[in-house]
Structure formats: structure tokens, C-alpha cells
Amino acid sequence: MTGTERPPAGDRLSPGGEPGAEVIVVGAGPVGLSLAIDLAWRGVSVVVIEERRAGEPPSVKCNHVSARTMEAFRRLGFAGAVRDAGLPADYPHDVAFRTSTTGVEFGRIPIPSRRDRFTCTDGPDTGWPTPEPPHRINQIYLEPVIFDHARALPLVRIVNRARCVGVDQGPGGVRARVRDLEGGGESVLEASYLVGCDGGRSRTRGWIGASLEGTAVVQRTQSTYLRAPGLLERMQGAPAWGTFSFNPRRCGVVYAVDGIERWLVHNYLRDDEADFTSVERDASIRAILGVDDGFSYEVLSKEDWFGRRLVADRFRDRRVFICGDASHVWVPYAGYGMNAGIADAMDLSWLLAASLAGWGGPRLLDAYEAERLPITEQVSRFAMNHALALRKERLAVPPEIEDAGPAGQKIRAEWGKRSYELNVQQYCAAGLNFGYFYDHSPIIEYDGATAPGYTMGTFCPSTVPGCRVPHVRVHGGQSLYDLLGPGYTVIRTDRDAPVERLLTAAAARRVPLDLVDIEGPEVDRSYDRALVLSRPDQHVAWRGDAVPDDLEGLFDKISGSAGCTGIARSTGTEDR
Image 1 (cartoon, rainbow, N blue to C red):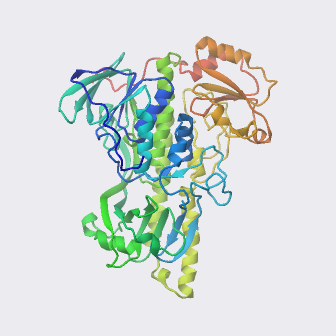
Image 2 (cartoon, rainbow, N blue to C red):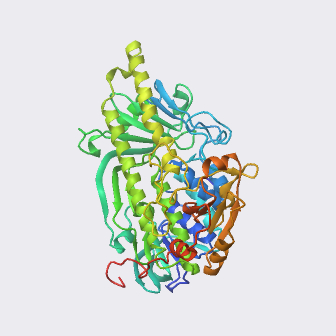
């Protein structure tokens, strides 16, 4: 399905009472839908409340799906459908640096097209330690794929044209008041938990008493989604997914949306420009594209927005949680806004499922905020610092960059190198994808070892508890991740290491635990313990060369039963 087709109408509300579900998700964007799909995959029933009509296109944003997100989509069964959507199969996913979109190119980050993604071995965006490398696709093509997958699941119900207007909660569950935006009536939905994936203007964030903290304005951007059929043929050299324009008149970025005629243009305001109204949109677009007044294009939509660095001071109040932009908003560098939100969802989903299944202890859900809040704070600072570095570059563009002679050639060569080194960190972000770790979780059994440093561009695979389980190919090329199920998995690299006591203790506690044996040179390079316990979200929960003596203590820890005193932190009132 394309980003403009509309599927059949979604469910509508019935006046008065409504059949409940185990979890209510507010918001059917990529984060909310991914959460619903993952919960259903774990056997949890979900109702998703969405204000838009079924199939109503989202905003033209989010042009990148990270490898970690693609890994989740693979596990859930629709990574192939996502990779088949978006740009034409042979369209380069490169990032180019030019004097204008149609001007002289002076640098390029090579990134394989989707046709070449699994065969190309050259360039900084290849050789990823994952079964699913990243994919460039605009949200108008991505969201329909996720929506179709979610809508087909028996455990997921999507209610469109509905708004959650309030939530009450008590020790046994939540009651959400939902308004029909077509008929105006209100209904009540009951569930065990509610998750707000309702964006930067989240109502749910207010209901849990959370506030956004950080930097209110990092940059100001004038964005225009346009149709320009003649632009591609005017470009010098090969096209690119993203094209930076650096010239004294205007600096900006143009992203290919369909690889044919639709483009998203970001125009960055300068410090001396008072506000958006002081910037002439058409003139700025033409300066970025490098075209004169005779060139025709059609504006499809436009938006003026502020890049921010804001993180909520809490992600939870008892049975109500927030994910994605509801909990963090930052400048869209490194393509990690939506992807961080889906990472939130993948962390929270298994915690909720374990709690509903009965084997999760009272402290299990405490791990969500303890794990995700520090990581999003770190990523928000990475994004802000990168945005500030790029802003500094834009302010320093020399007038001679467009000169045809030796002086201009020298400047372009210097800027090409600088632009490559600065931007390869965000567009080929191995560290952001694979390097983050949870170092203060109440449900991870730490052993005193220090995790490798967390950076934007680089990472080192590690079995230190809290890190991502190192990915390896086993059994003749099969992805290790394809062998990991919805529960815990003990990964054994030494078949002589006994695990019977561990498996028996898990069964007694009703903690789902599988055993996977792996071996080979790649395993030896990545795994330094005989036993590594993988969580349901592929983070290391514990490691060792032998099963620990205190198995009760280990399972108390990883199930959220250690040192528990109550169901959750509260704002101070039992119902609101």
C-alpha cells in the first residue's frame, strides 16, 4: 500500500460501555502501533485510540528506520514489507554535500540502496552486526505498512476518530474516557494499563504529572514538502537520499521522498532572522535547490517548527506510561526521534506482558523509567550537540565555495572532508544503534564490569550486563536473534556448562526461559562467558561461566521481585 491509499474505515466507538482490553494505547503512529503489535505478539490484548481517520496520511517526517527498529520489525514479521516500501529499489540512499541541490557536489557518504543493502560491502554504512540493517523511508510509506500489520492481528483493535479525554486509575486497573470525534458521545474503556504514545503535545504526559525539561529552542526550521518533477534531471551526478546545500545565500537539506518528484526541503533560519515570517519561503527554497524563478514546483504541505531538546521528568505514574515524543522531543538529527520511541515501546512491552502473565514482580515495571529515561537524556544531548555543530558550519560557509577556480575547488575539498566527518556520525550511527546500555536497572544482575563507552558513531560488542546481546551468525549463517523467543534465553557457548538448575528454577517461578547453544569463531570473538542470559528485548540480564549458587536471588532480580515494597511510584493520589 502506498502512503496515499486509504484502507477500510477503522472501528468506531459504541455509546456508553465498551469491551475492554489488557492494555490501552493512545496514539496510532509508528510508536503506538509498534507497541500494540509487540504486545499482541506476546499474547496481550490491546485497544489503540487514534484521532485520525483510518489511512489518513501522517506528516511527512521521519525519513529513517534504525537497525534496532528493523530488528524489532523482523521479529514481529513485517521487516520485509517495510524494506520493500519507500524509494525505488535502486535509488541511492547516499548523503551528498553540494553548493545547492543542483549545484557542484563536493562530498558524499555512500549508503546502499535497498536493492544493494545485503550485498554491498563498501562504505561506512555496511557490515552492520545485525540481521536487519537500517532503511531509509519516509513515514508516509512506513506508517501504512505498520498499520496494516497491526489491523490484521486478532488481539489488536484500532479505534479511529476517537480522543482519550481522561483516565482514572486505581490498584486494579485504569478507566479511560474516550470521545467519538464524529458523533460526540463518550465511552469508557477499561484495562490493566494505559500507554500514551500521543506525541509532543501529549495529554497523557499531563495526566501522569510529568513535565518536559531541557532546552526549548535549539534551532528553527522551515520545512516544505513539494512536488518538483523536473528537479531530478537538473542534478549534476547521481541522486542522493539526502542532499545538503551550502552556499552564502541559504543552507538547507533536501530529502528524497519518492525518488521521483516528491521532496522534503528543510530551510534553517539564521540567528539574524527574527522569526519565520521574516524568511521568504519561495526564495529560500530556490536558493537551496539552486533554481531560478522559471523553475516550477508545487507546495504539498509546509510546517515551521522549533528543534528542541526536552525530556520528561518521569515516564510513569502507577499504571499509566508514556512513550516516544510524549516522553522526549529533540531535533531530528541521527534519525533517532521515532526510533528512540520504538525502543521505548520494545522495552515497555515485555515488562507489561510479564506483569500481566503473573511472573513479573512488583518492581519489574519500575525498570522502564530507570532504563529509558537516562538513555533518552543521553541521546537528546547527542542530537543537540550535533545540531549545534552543524549550525556552526552553516554560519561559516565562505562566499568562495561556489567559485569555479582553484580557490573554490580548494574550499570545496576542505568542506567536503569536514561535512563527511561530521555527518557520517549521524547517518551511519553504529553507536546509537547498538551501543546503548542500561547501567542502573533494578532488574539486571550486574557483575562490576564497566560497559564500553557510549558514542554516536562507534560501538564495541559486549556481554557486560545491560548491553545489547552481541549478534552473531550461527548454524551456517542463521541470525542468533532469529533463535531468541519472547521470553528469556540462556545463550550457552560451552556445551559442557550445566544449565539444568537454571532451567528448573525458571520453570518453578514460571519465568519463560529457553536454551540456545552457539559456537564458532564469530562466537568466540564476541562472547567471553559460557552463559549469557538474554532478556526478551535482547539486552544482557546476567552472565557467568557457571550457574550461580543463589538462583532465588537471580530470579528475584530479573523478575522484578527483589526488594519490592509496592506496585509503583505515585504522584500521591490513588485516583485522578
